Image 1: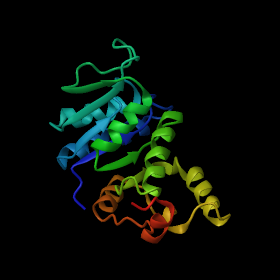
Image 2 (image 1 turned 90 degrees about the vertical axis):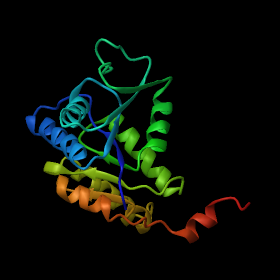
Image 3 (image 1 turned 180 degrees about the vertical axis):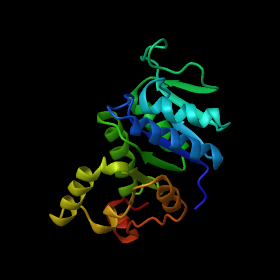
Length: 197
């Protein structure tokens, strides 16, 4: 499928190793080179900033969506050409989900997982049919992937829902899988859980 925009979920911290900033910058550069609009949380911090700066430096389009309660002087990147301020984290997630063609998680923690699992759950429920991906560089998300496999093995996650998630180990692998994405959800299952009109 043609991807024109990606919502990036990642840390507002740098992490303890420079490889994380390098990964985020390489991701932002790839978006710029492929003319993919980068949506993100609008922060001037951490991996979020590294990805956005790399994309902008190479003439890519970056759009920030940030809650208005964050500080303009320390958190929000007020130098962005396109920045939308919203009232809450929930509103930010909803706007990111509406706006982007795909969703990618790089290393992060609570906020990254909150955003990631919300869009993945919405894909499970058929509320959107867009690709959701984890970039598992350096095995950062391997324990999480193992937990998802346990969900499936123990009968709490159907195979076709597990397969909604793209897992990639490199940026090249990620973008190839995004381009070749086919939604694995079950029409029969969706028809069963949803109200008939």
